[in-house]
Length: 115
Length: 117
Image 1: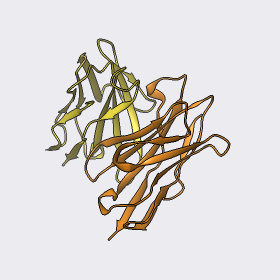
Image 2: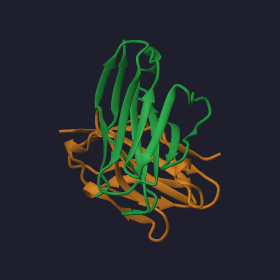
Image 3: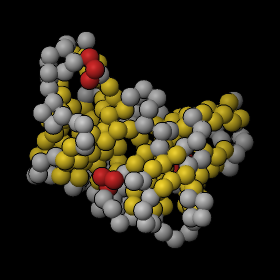
């Protein structure tokens, strides 16, 4: 069975500093990886995804994520955090050869950017 | 592109009544729509998957007679919570998937907060 681990429930970072939100996964075959962001009382917004190709994926709002096959990780990063980045972030995975229904979410990481 | 709307955004109802939530893909045709439930500070739990014109596929433990799903067109799916009870209070989120603009990515609606008194 596939799974996603977001080891940190909460990440605090000062505005202007780089941020990292961690994600590791387990899936049969090649992974199809996603990051979503959720603001309070809102649905999830798609940030970026990895299918194949370059291990560094660039997404919305200046976010990027690095796929590391040997470490089965897909950490989300941003060089300079903004207060407006404060939100709940979800990593998700499904088998590349599977269906969208098989998308599995991590437990979420609450990011707080301090002014 | 890839905008999904939900209506209503918030609903309060009495125990025993039924509530219908609509999910629409506004600028693309959604071959598949998904319904999730999210508890406070928790991840999303997939309830069911619906394909246009066919019966929904429910996840294990989800009562199909309680959570009725209809996917009548390529832009609309509805979730009806029948005979709602306080334990059904939750945040319900739909998503839609299509081959365009980005292959097979799920795009999420803004969610519906259901409170059953």
